[in-house]
Every structure is written in C-alpha cells, then in structure tokens.
Length: 306
Image (cartoon, rainbow, N blue to C red):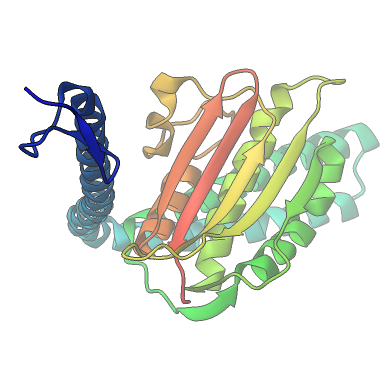
C-alpha cells in the first residue's frame, strides 16, 4: 500500500487516510469531548432541578399555609369569643386567690392551719394561671396573626432572649451559649412574635434536658447564620436552637408540631405548634434534625432582607 508518513502529529498514508495506529487516540479524544459535554449538561440540569425543586417546595408551603389559615380563621371565628369570655373570669379568680392568701396570713389562725390553707390557695392560683397560659396559647394558635414587620438584626434578638432565659438556665443546670457571626444578620420580622417562637423552642429544649442526668453535658446553643448568596435562589437567614437532650425518635419528629401533642407534665401541647405557625406566617420554615441519645437541632429559616 505504500510507506507511512507523519504529518501534523497524525499517522497517514499517501491517500491521507488515518492509519490503524491513530484510531485509539481519535476514539479517546472523542470520548473525552462527549463526556465533557454530558457532564456540562448534567451539571446545568442538576442546577435547574435544584432551583425548581426549591421553588416547588416554597409553593407547596405557601399552599399549606393558605389552607391552614382558612381552617384556623374558621376555628378562630367559632372559639375566639368563647375564649375571651373564659379569660376574664380566670383573671378574677387569680386576683381573688391572691387577696384570699393575704387575708389568711393576716388572720389569727393556728400556724399549721394557716399554712395548710395558704398551700391550697397557692395551688388554686398556680393552676388558674396555667389555664390562662393555655388559653393564651390557644388564642395565639387559632386567632389571626397580625405581623408588625421591621428590619431586625437577629443577633440582637438572640442576645435579648439569652439574657431573659439565663436565670432559668442557671437554676436548671443548663449551659446557655450563643454562636453569633460578627456581621449583622437582618430579616424583616415581627420581633415580638419571633421572640415568642424562639422562646418556645428554647423552653422545650430545656425541658427535654431535664431527663439528662449529670455528669452528662446539658447545653443549649443558639446559633444565627446568614447563608451566602446563590444566583437564582432566594437568600435566607437561619436561627438554630440546639440541645444535648435525649433526641427525638424519627416517628415523632413531625408529630411534635401538631397541637396538643406533648409528653411534658403540665404542658399545653401548643408551644411548638404556635412556634411553627408564627414562623410560617413570616414566610419561613422550621426543620428538625435529631439523633436519639445525642440531641436535637431546630432550624428556623427566614427570608433575608439583603
């Protein structure tokens, strides 16, 4: 067939046809190019899938909020008036129990009898106050929430909550720690209502750690994070309420957000339900990450103003 000459790094015969020795390099180059194209397309497709999935999740959450709001509005219309009618007599009972306690202490009664009556009056006042708290939670859960949104640095909000809860954490032997970034993390929120939601999570975490006996670590961590901007995706900020309690079994992780689900003595069963509703009214979401025997992480995600 003739001798082989090499031109421009390729092995060709005199008719400019590729020789057999050049085919492996050509095939490898073609495969590499095709693989690069496939990877590029796959990366783009994955990005689009993530984008549309997050958009879909947000749409589904919005739809759930709308349905829940409609049901709660009906519930609130039926029960709101009744709840307010109950609330006023309860306030009167608490006030009269306090007056009765003072009268018993001022009366010339034997010491043992006076102490016995005071204990019963204190029990009456305490249980009536608990009924008022349950009623307040119910009104907050079933009633219409009006948000007074203002730009708020979440670091300041967490600092204020830490100062408020610190005496109780010391009393119960829980180490309270804040993990805050140096730069402001701003969200457009109703600071009073968001504080209530986070406080409910904090109290829930501290109660969960009651079952953790020394010398095991009992720690409550409050963390604020600002997520870096990601083109095409909404920017969010987050608050974490992390505890070193017993953790929550997988089968109960959604149940605990339902109204009147509680394992705590004297609990209303509305704390976490109210927290979730407040957060979702802000257009945010709450997620639970938990490991039995290690603790739990409640993550609040909120839209960022930046």
